[in-house]
Image (cartoon, rainbow, N blue to C red; front, side, top):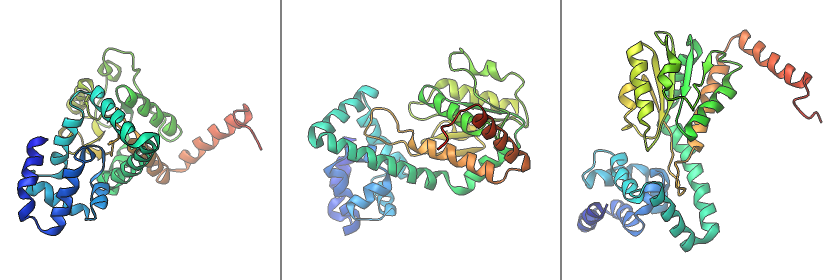
Length: 285
C-alpha cells in the first residue's frame, strides 16, 4: 500500500483537478479504500465513480478492483484480527456513533454494488438455470453455509429439488454423487476463499453440471469455473465480510424464479401457507 501511496504523491502535480481531488481523498484516509465502495468513495471526494477508475489506471492498475485489493490486503494483513484492530481504531476515533454510521453506509453501499456488479442480465440467467434445473445444490462455508440454508428456506416452495449438503460432513462432493447435466450448483464464496468450494466447483464442471457463483470480485478464483458469476459487495468496517449484498442477490434470484413460475409454483406456495395457518404457525390479528 505504501508504494501505491508514494506513487500517488508523485503524480499529484501532473494530475488534472478532478483526479487530484480523488488522489487527495485516498491519501487522506487510505484505509477507506479497503472498506468503502468505489461509488461512495467517489462521492466523498466530490468526483464521479469513473474518475476513481481513471485514478487507479494512472497509478498503474488495470482495474479499480486490483487497485482496491492492495488496500484491502494492507488493512486485513493480520487476517480477521487485523480488521478487528482496524475496527477498534475506528471506535477510538469516531466512537460508537461513528461505527454505527460506517456500518450503515457499508450496508447501503454493498446492496447498491451488488445490483450494479451482479447485473440484471446475469441475475436473470442464473434464475433461469435454477428454474429449469433437475436438481440444485447450494453450498457455502461458515456464515455462507447459513446463507445457502436461507436460500433453501426461501426457495423450497418454488425449487423443491433445492438441496443444501450438511455443513458437518468432511466432503461436500460426497453429498453430490450422481451430479450431472441438468443439475445446478450454486456456490457462495468470498475472501478468504474456501478451498473446499473450489473443489466443489471443479467437480461440478467435470460432472457436466452448471455452476452459479456468488462471490466478491470478478477476479475471484470461482470466476473461471462458473457459468454465471454474480458479484456481491462485501466491504465492511466489521472484521468479517458483510453478508448484506449476498442476501440481496439471494432474495432477487428467488423473486425472479417466482415471477416466471407456473401455476404449480403458486399452488405449492398456497399449500405451504395454508398448512402453516392450519397448524397455528402464525399469530392472526
